[in-house]
Each structure stands twice: as structure tokens, then as C-alpha cells.
Length: 351
Image 1 (cartoon, helix red, strand yellow):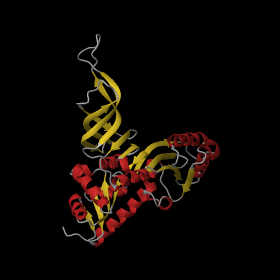
Image 2 (cartoon, rainbow, N blue to C red; image 1 turned 60 degrees about the vertical axis):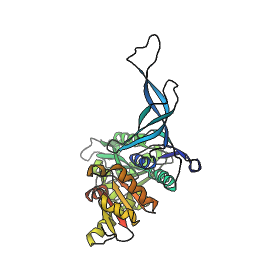
Image 3 (cartoon, helix red, strand yellow; image 1 turned 90 degrees about the horizontal axis):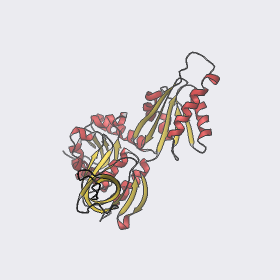
Image 4 (cartoon, rainbow, N blue to C red; image 1 turned 45 degrees about the vertical axis):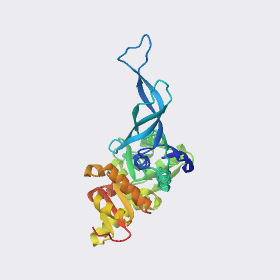
């Protein structure tokens, strides 16, 4: 999340959405009665001599809406906000009507609240932290995968094959493949990304050197101990010990440590752990939750959106921490298998 402006004293912020985690943060930040300002489009009927009465013109406008309803659709990475129109950049739009806008990665929005709390500020700061990206490559001389790790989410961007076989002269035969691969990585690179190259053999070193030349001052690191390449290699990188050491302060590694501890407590019969929505909700009400993880497919398990937001906000208001787990990754799958929600507790809470 890019925080363009933050003024807690006057209760407003301006942000640009970058990822699915940002949508979850905004869903928790925006409440009924708040005001949002964003760009949208709306059909406006023009009353002139040549206009058709049954047709309207779709115009781009900047709207201020007082929020009446908000819904997160995590499966397609968007938030839908409906509200009463307060202001509009097009004078032909009536201010007595209502409008619905869809917010997704790439959109910018201003949020205004009458009461701005510390939780609201923390959500934005954590959103900024989740925006740190690792651009990862799992490669050998025959196959490569390129992906990103941002927050606790992993995304596969592309895979490439060299078409090479046998024991041809590596120095000569891999040049076109190396150039294509370096070009694909360069296109995905954003300023501030840490580039991580892994895979069996020595070809990864050639790619790392090529990327250092192309990307100028970018941080390019080579890690050892990965035997997979392509899409499988990208999915294996977060579990690689060298990567975990390199990214030890990242959300994805923190989440893996959290899930390992939760599984350990469950296996040993430790009472200081809770899983499923209702049990975590009870522990949150008691102020016992120290850390919690929520799977991004928790709604498919029957969790109510308003209840979930209330529980997550309650946990952090009482000094706890909440992680969002990507259900396509191993740690996220484990959270999903525990009912979509699991928490480490400060003390045991009787059901």
C-alpha cells in the first residue's frame, strides 16, 4: 500500500492500493458513515436537442460518497463500496442519489473519518510494510519461473523454457535464453524490490550478473539449496532456509514461524492455542489473543464478513497481531485446514 497522505489529527488519509492485503486493510479501515473520495464512472443523461431520452453518456467523475455498505470480494481482489453522493466533479450528477464504486489494486482513494483511532494508523503502517516485495527467480539452463512475494502472498508471474538439451556449449547456447529471462525479470522489477535468484547448478550466477548490469543499483542476491525450477521452484522458495534467513523480518517468514508454533501447540495439547472462527472470537473477547492468522478463503468456510472484521480489529485493539495467510501457499493451506483462523494465546481460555 502506498500512503500518499496521512493526517490522523484531521481524520483522513490518501492511499493507493497495490495488493490483496491492501484490500483487507481497507475493508477493516472503512466503516459505515465514513466518507471516501475516488474516481469512478457514471451514466449521465444529457437533455439537449439531439440526445436520445433512453440513452446516457458514461462520464468519468470524482465522487465523494458517505459509506452505506461495504463488501470485500477476496476471490477476485476487489472491494465494493456503496454510498450516498456528497460531492461530484460533474455538475450534472445529482447529489441526492447513491452510487457504488469498485476498488481494486491500482486504484487510489481518500478516506475520511470523524474519529481516527490508533488502530486506523496501525492498519496503514502495516499496509506499507506489506508492500515490500521480493522478486524471485527459480532457474537452471532449461527452465525458469519468475514470481513475487509481497506481504504473505506469493504470485507466479511467468515461466520460460530455454529449449536447450544435451551438453551443448553453455556459454554460447544459453545467451538468447539468458537475455529473454533477464528481460522478463526487468519488466517486472519495481524500484525497491529485492531480487532473489535460486536454483540448481551455476546458471543462476550468470543470470544474477546479467540482472545487476540491467537493473543498476538493485539488490540482487543468489541463494543456494533450491533444487526445483519453474513454477515448482517459485512455490518452494519461501520454504528455503537461505531465503528465510535473508527475509527473516518479512511477513511471509513471520507467518511461517507462527504456523509452525501453532501446529506444535496443537500437537502437544497446549491449551494456549485456538482455531476456527468461534473459538478465536471467544479468545479475542477475553483479550487473550497474542497473534492470529486468517486464511484468505475464510469466507468459503462460513465466516461472516462483519463478524470477521470485528474480531480482527478487536485483536489488534487489545495489543494482538493479525496475519493474512495466502491459501495457495503451504502455511496458508495449514491455516485453512484449521477452519480458516488460528490464534496463539497469552493464556488458556475455557470454551
